[in-house]
Structures are given as C-alpha cells and as structure tokens.
Image (cartoon, rainbow, N blue to C red):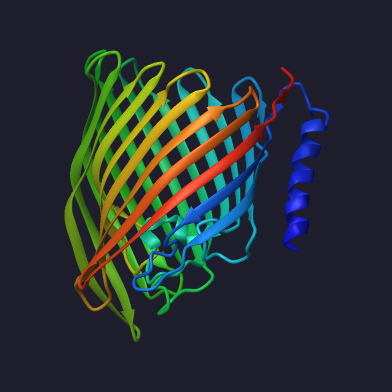
Length: 387
C-alpha cells in the first residue's frame, strides 16, 4: 500500500508538469523531492531510546490564479514516508493551504483556510511523555485593512483554529481544542520612518470536551522604527488577562492568569543577507488544559553566498508555563537549532542539507532530553505558466 502511494504521488506530480495550463491567468509550479531524515532521539525520551533513519517522498503542487484586484492560490503538500504512523519526525503529512487576496487603493482583504494532518512531534510545545500522535488541524483567518488617511491605517484580524489528536487524555496530556481570536490594530505614521501602533486582542480557548477554557484579553502599544534603510525595529508591550475555567461535576471553578505581554524584533535585509532577532512573551494555545504563557527568543540568518549556494542558521529557545488543573503550573524549556546549506545544482534541481539539535527540560522534577538530527533532500522544481 505504501509503495503504491509513493508511486501515485510521483505520477500525479509528473502529470501536472505535462498538463496544459488551464487559462491565461493560471500558473502551476510543482515540486518533487526525495528526503532522508536521521534523528538520534526523535521522541525526546529519557533513559533508553532508539535512533531513527527514515526516507520520504515530498510533493508540492502550488497553483495560483490572478484577476485585476484578486489573487487566488491553492497549495497542496504531502510527504510519504517509508513507515506508517505518527511517532517519527519523518511521519507522513498532508497539508492544504488556500488563500484569496484583494487589494485596492484604500482596502486590502485576505482570506486563508488551511487543513493539516501531521504529527504532534513537529510542534515542540506539544512534545510530552515521549509520544507522537496524529494531529488534525483546520485553520480559518480573515484580515481586513483600510487606509483611513495618508498617516493612519486600521486593521482587523479574525482567526479560528481547531485541533484534534488521534490519542489524547492521560497518555499524552493533549486535549482536542478550538482557539478563536479577534484582533483590531490602529497604526499612525509619526514620521516617514516611525509608526505608532495600538493593538488589542480578545480570544477564547477551550477543550472540545467542555472540561477547560481560557478567555483572554490584552492591549498593547507598539512602535515600528526604520533605524536606517536596512534596519527595522518593531516593539510591542502591554498587559494581558486570562480567566481560566474548569467544569468540575457541573460546577465552574475560575482562576485568573495575568501579566505583561511583549514582542521585540530587529531585522536587517540586503540583497544577500537577511537577519532577524526577536524576544517575546504571549499567551498561546499548545493543546494542554489552558492557554500557556510562552517566553521565546529567536534568531535567524539567511545568506546568499553565491548564485548556487545559500546558507542559513535558525535558533529558538522557549519557556512554557502551563497552568494545570487543581492549581499551580508545569514549566518546560526547549530549544531548537538548525544549520543548513542549499546548493542549486541547476536551474531546477536543488540539494539541501540541514543539521539540527533539539533539547527539552522539565523543571519539576528536572528531566533533560536531547536529539541530534540530519536532513538531506534533493528536489526538482518545475515551472509552467501563461501570462
């Protein structure tokens, strides 16, 4: 069965590259790749653990359609591994992203919908008890922006996420949940280089079994400042309040989770070098009982060394504080570091190598786990379009 799926994926992609383009405004850009993945401790287990080496076929079939003010895109992506199940970092996945964009002189509207089936191991905030399970996610997002004047812009974002796990409860600690948020933003240009922002957000997070819920509100003030033509500083800071609810035998017990939230990002962009650094604190959904307080530090460097070689490095450190049923919290820390190099062999063929290290630590009791990884991929990009 697995072999037939792999053969079918390759056949579909090759068929798309030879098919007639649908209309003048259509463009199709298929990609086929072969990947090898090694992880020394893929499930981040303690004690005795087993390394894994997996192979997979990657297929991307992005398509887009353009009108005068509208742009539509559809991006199916799939990975077919040599082993079934979702307990591997190289597990099968099926992703579908759809988007519609509309732009006029004063308005812009974007509508996005996504449907994913993959492994919870791909989300470091959900890695717990050394178990990876199937994760089904559906996402909807609508963003509207209107230019009020030469200096001011108003923006509204409405999003909802539903996540289902194949196995949840005591074994994994993961609960099926829905998270919905409404976020208005007002931006005012102080000068040509600096803009002041006022950001608000109202959200609700609840487990689909009705056992727990979190209602969150936050208000922040922000500033975007172009330090030079290359450097941009973006900073937000404010206060957040979350009310956590538990349904115990028909009675609702509530508790508050309050504190500061903030985000600070510094970016630099040139023709060859992109650099980004950030630090933030936010309340975020992670599949556990309530919203988690998430402290994050990130860094990313992308360098175009030559026309053929691109080098990059990524690092993320996070600390999660999870409120637990009955009071108190469970604290975890983890980090992810990647070094990668991509070689453009020809105009259509690319070879990529990535080295990674992942670590996780529980604070009470102190438990540390790490995993080293190697990712190799060779891919063929096709391009067909009519204008």
